[in-house]
Amino acid sequence: MIVLEELTKSFGPRTLWEGLTLTVEPGRMLALVGASGSGKTTLLNCMGLLDEPSSGRILFGGADLLRLGHGGRRRFRRNHLGYLFQDYALIENATVRANLDVARRRRAGADHAGALARVGLAGREKERVHHLSGGERQRVALARLMVKQPSLVLADEPTGALDSCNGAMVVDVLRRMSRRGCAVVIATHDDRVRGACDTAFDVHARREVGG
Image (tube, rainbow, N blue to C red; front, top):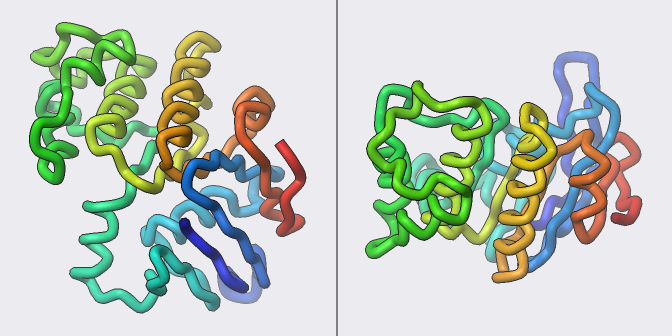
């Protein structure tokens, strides 16, 4: 479970949001919604320790992530966090298998073949990522999540550049991960993604608005 308590984020004189409180329990899938510029991606980045809120606490497993040192933050990302970036965040000049091996380092015996089959890329371990289409790259990123099996997934507009078929597959895999106990948080403008989530949180209004 991840708990945000009274988070505020300011950029100079501009306050993006303040007093933001949110809890995401294991086995739940939550959509972060709101107009462009409301701070959905910034909030995801704070949860993933890629950015810092101006004030407040982020609790995971009872520990305040914002008080962790460099080593503690690295262990949190390695052992618990999975991130699905809009730009895929893959090693472009490496093979598909090498990209999955990055996740395997914390989990011996991971099922590369099964993960790739689940996303429609069976038998393509030796292909280099830079030869793949955008949709195929997102599928590799999704397979990497499945190999890692994190307890928290943060996804930033994961269907934004995909056709409806690939987008539906991404949502289905994230849904399956949540049903197995993973907490999933998705920043999205897509009503179909929002509808697939258990609930939605309007970042601008700082309140849950239903699924």
